Length: 191
Image (tube, rainbow, N blue to C red; front, side, top):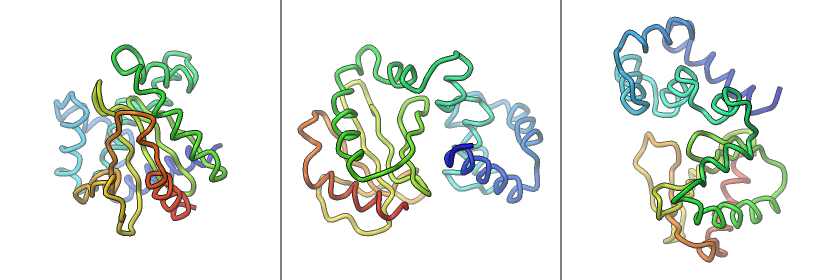
């Protein structure tokens, strides 16, 4: 079992403890809620069970089987196939940004890559970055870093989000020294 799978199992076990409900009961409650869209379900879970954004988001993905691993398994696809899907069509021109970031991050050391439905999560003991297309024209890098980020390239995200800071990007040239230094700090803090 990979560290990512173990972390997911731990998170789901903690959600079950917090809510006092089994995963089957939570799935049934979600189905009974009548909510269909990911964001609506996530917000309903936060409101109904007092879950934080990350827990509610993860539970929504698990319940809908919409995370990258589940989506890939359902289609008998590989992680590379999921990446191809993320960067398909009008978003294809953003893939070089992804590749430039991955080349820089690979120099840091070991980490796990967890493709999701519309982005990629990077983890050590915990998630340190998320990357992927935000729109057809803009790529977004999110980092988890409790320290104050000095680079003006990164904007703080309101509490409750999946990352503390984001950096919008439109070109591989945006992967500069300031971005790499901030990523390295996030990487080190996650290990």
